[in-house]
Amino acid sequence: MRQLEISDLITAVDPHTGRRLPVQRSEVMRQLREADDERAARIVARMPTDEDGVLDPYAVDRLVVLVHTELQRLSEELRIDERLVHVLGPLLAAIRATTGRSGPFRLVDVGCGLGYLVRRLAATGALGEDVELVGVDLDGTLVGEAERLALADGLDCRFVHGNAFDLPEAATVYVSTGVLHHFRGPALEAFFQAQAASTALAFCHFDIAANRLAPIGAWIFHRARMRHPLGRHDGVVSALRAHDDETLLRAASVPGIRALVYEPRGMSNPFCTTLRPVIGVRPDLEEPLRRSLGRGARRLVGPEHFAVGAR
Ligand SMILES: C[S@@+](CC[C@H](N)C(=O)[O-])C[C@H]1O[C@@H](n2cnc3c(N)ncnc32)[C@H](O)[C@@H]1O
Image 1: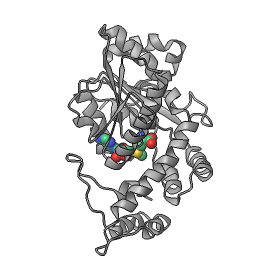
Image 2: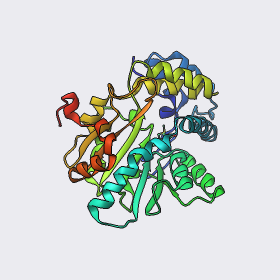
Image 3: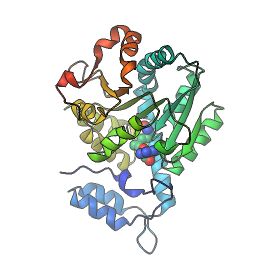
């Protein structure tokens, strides 16, 4: 059975212009039924449309913001910012030492949603004052909400509506949370190639660790912490769609990038490690990163750990 997330189907934007595109409810339901997911089709059937059957964009926006607000609770409980700082702190130390630059270093959160990670990093200042924090998302409503929340808290960070790989200013490091599993096959490869082709020095993308417990864990978590059926549905599907370590290492092993996974399967407790990062560094950064991680470097493995060949 093909697994589809409802949230991927009910909004559509032109990836180059960011312009919102109309979405036919019947078309979304057709795709979900084709994927044998009647329950998801019923959730969509309850969403309002205009007389031509196009999903009401305002209702969709309200729902997307609601679901992402619930999703933020998971990020809070999983302490995603602390997990990122745990590896990004040493990575930035390695970048400072290797480049000899004093900054500013630009962190770009790809698909920032409501910007929780960027806002939290701005609030804690955990990465240092020389790190500029930027969140980017193709969804203008989410970016608008992220900006509003940052402004309300007087945070030093910014948000951009658009494609994270089309920014006028290059990123030093690309990061993301919960985004990788949305890309499949060639789209996943293009995601990593875009970063290798940029002037960025590294990336660090956290996503659900694929293991047999993940769908059960996701079901319990989303049942307990999320209210809307769409959020509950997509949460479990996300865990089912999560990429395994080998797939991520293979896709991220593009020329000019050394791909690594931190705390891979077999080196972490599957009950605790719900999210783990795939990291990519320019090859001369690997040794400084390992030195900077200290004992933690033992948990950083490349494709050879799984005998995954580079493409
Ligand atoms: C599931 S959401 C993740 C939201 C957020 N990271 C979180 O943890 O709450 C995935 C987001 O990635 C965005 N996205 C996908 N590709 C993108 C790109 N190339 N540039 C900017 N945003 C992108 C989508 O618009 C979507 O809002």
